[in-house]
Image (tube, rainbow, N blue to C red):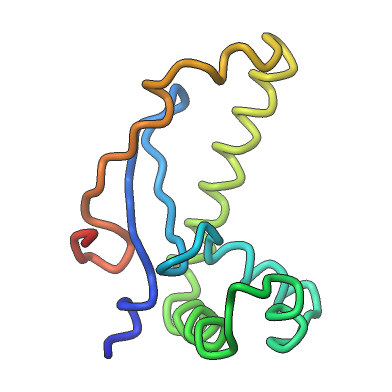
Length: 119
């Protein structure tokens, strides 16, 4: 099994530009969640306790992927934070109604950070 096989890579358009999400396969949990918890001082066992649908294998795979692709993953995490911040600022200006546009939530699977097409 390749390390990238643990993840789902998708790119999609948002009102704030193209966005990318890297999720742990079979979960809605993004790799940034695990990486940020680990960087915040949590050990893998504590991360599993926080997200009981994960197991240690997937947490270690995520951390290994991060360590092997640190610059790329750090850039990805900054991009995710910027898009999230844009949504938050838009929410503050317009209220939650702007989130009801279904076109905002249409994912377009394409080549991801790992350079492989999404399954």
